[in-house]
Length: 342
Image 1: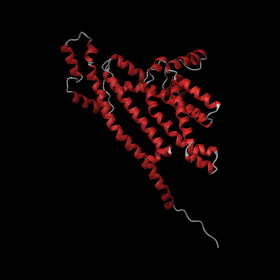
Image 2 (image 1 turned 90 degrees about the horizontal axis):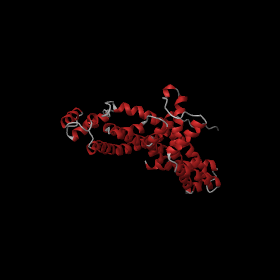
Image 3 (image 1 turned 180 degrees about the vertical axis):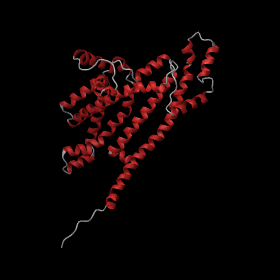
Image 4 (image 1 turned 45 degrees about the horizontal axis):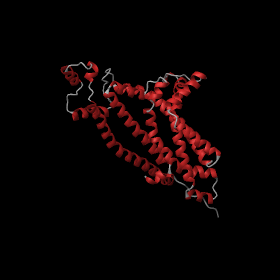
């Protein structure tokens, strides 16, 4: 008597796949919903406080354009041209609606469009920050994993010592050393300047490698330390003991149980790292002669260009929220603990 294997119809396959797809979609929608519920009030409060800085600062475009000897009549005329004679809430609402349309205003100093100025500098800073983040994540992941797998060994102690040393080294000191050794001494990289990617990937990478390396040390240290701690804690969980009892191999235990459960804290630390790399790069940009986002923010603040500073703060808020959303989506997809929480 022969038996025939059951035929798996497309409908049956869809019946198996659809619940998984719906569950994954539900996790993503849950993360997006919570992020939106947090982003909207934070953005409203942050933009209101940001706009209120102008009133609190007492700065005026008339003072910048006409100098300290400007007459009250000239000041009133200039401020009326900029709409500063209107009530505060009216000014805020006009500025806020412009922000929602991607218009960040006009510079008090040179009359240029702030969105364009920020876009030029942000492209430079994002290039450096993304490469620094990639270097930091890859190297930090390798060091943290080695230290956790070889815990309490000389290798673990050597990695821990190395990570401790680089964590206390300021980026500008690292940048000066890199320029002295790799640019001036060995002539492996250009010491300053920036070349857009449109002019060639090779020159673009050559110009952003040293500043990215200088910024990556802090990321390497944070990722390595956090990953080592979380992986060691995961090794002590009951599910790992159960996997050992079931006879699973060390590699399968690490990738199937330890790594997935230990990635969460390390990924969470990246939520604030990327925006801080973009914002804290001003010293590095000075060292390497880059006209980036951080340097633009510093120059605008020193010049008293309030609309430019407000634009910088708005873009920084969007960067923080966007990158944290990406990290939360990755956490919801990768880590089991995050999946259970959705």
